[in-house]
Length: 359
Image 1 (spheres, helix red, strand yellow):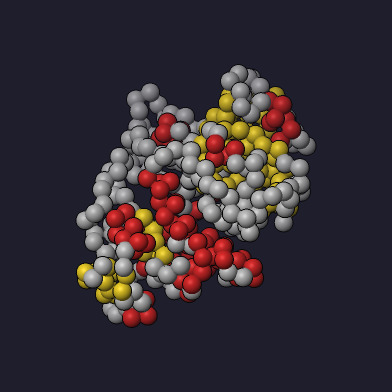
Image 2: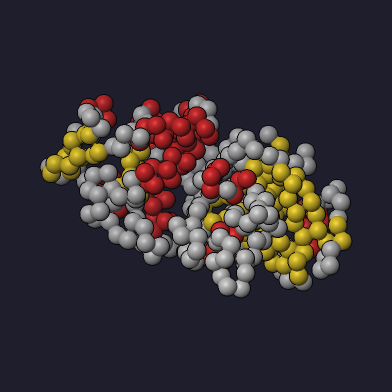
């Protein structure tokens, strides 16, 4: 793995997300912005010149521009030529990122059809987007790589240090590294690896919740499912991490498959979020550290109440091996419940495994 030299990141706002996704003609004033701005108060021109050292600087009307090739995490596409430069005194812009424009040069890592990057439920109307962070890194071999994540806090098994933590606590910024962080281009979820310092996969990071919302709570509950993974032998930990990468991708597709409804109680015990969709949570029926990694049916989509019940109530008969016709009967506190799996459930998890990581 190559070491990371520099990195810039930007959390997309609701306005950013709307403008780069809306189709032509949505607004009377025209096509709307096709770029993503980064404020020069957080990433200075000096930072940009350092980031693009060795790349020819193009003199523009309002400031310098750079054309460079960038690779994308999670795809076999690329590299692709991207233009970044000063559009006005207060900002530097990533050009041509509007998805539906004829001039679209959306970075492959940030395309919904290629990597599962969030997609607006209705591109013609503004929608709420939370904790969606995009970034581009420069590696020691001078390759540029783009990636993204959507969470307000690092997951329990993510390798992180004080510098990387700024990606969770700040809205945009420029980070420099000194040989302490490597970059795993085969991991589209979290490619950063700490090679020096006190933070490592064997020393879990205390999560930082930037914004108290339901998504942060979901992460807490999902992490509880894997608490035993940190207690298993070292040679097994890498497999656990790989399974987690596969599962993180699968969860997004499973929620879509079930329309965010509970596999046990449907709409009951859930609620509609501000964006009009139902709220649901992912759960491992059997913790990864206890063999739950072996079944493609192990991840289920649940209402928040049922999820908590499976963590804390008395559970009887929860044996995936006894599933018949995509159904499994079991008991919660002595009451009968049934989990129902969609016929495509296992295929989605399996495809996530083969598409994103090899176990």
